Length: 261
Image 1 (cartoon, helix red, strand yellow):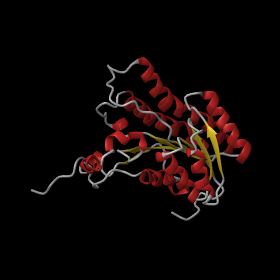
Image 2 (cartoon, rainbow, N blue to C red; image 1 turned 135 degrees about the horizontal axis):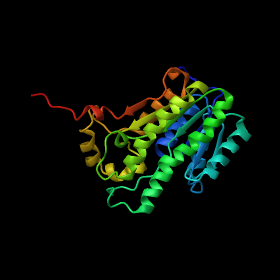
Image 3 (cartoon, rainbow, N blue to C red; image 1 turned 180 degrees about the vertical axis):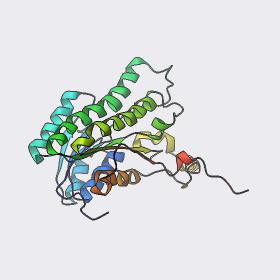
Image 4 (cartoon, rainbow, N blue to C red; image 1 turned 135 degrees about the vertical axis):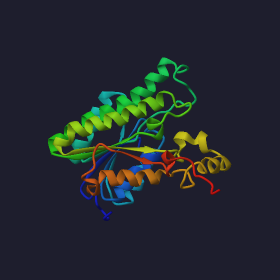
């Protein structure tokens, strides 16, 4: 990809405070984009820290506290972006929650609501609000974060799997509906990524190595692996791609590596 391939573009990244969201924001900024960094937590210094990192890349960054499950928050985020930059070219929906270890039969209604309202409805709120702006502009790129457990159910993932499967169908529907407006909508389905979001899965080195052996490429993903895929989908290098779900999983879907006989 060309250096500065996103020069003069404006991108919103939700869940930008840490993990995949932070890595995506830095990748887009390094490619020349100005950033709106959105997160539900904005008072612990981490979101401002990401903005400072982007500043050192000589790019602009606006930080906004946003609960994406609340439409009013999402609309304010979009308004702030337009007030500062005048346009929105890219949206990457990284914000999400996971309440691990609960089957669907065990999940309390309040936990179901929290996961579905944030991951699925919140992603829809963001796509709807930004999509309307992109439609007026005449184009844009939306990248949604799904998951491998949105393609194949995961043990103990419960409502999270359902929400991520819903994001896949939402991506496809929006891609169909918005193609005539020159808006591309795609999704990424990561495998296990080494972030604080799921640190319980890979906390110890031995456990991480054991899980890595289940992946054909032999390791768990880093946040930057996902960010590179997001950058590709956000850029014009993917200008004939819409409605797809790209697994970024080290070959997880292929199956565990086989030892030679």
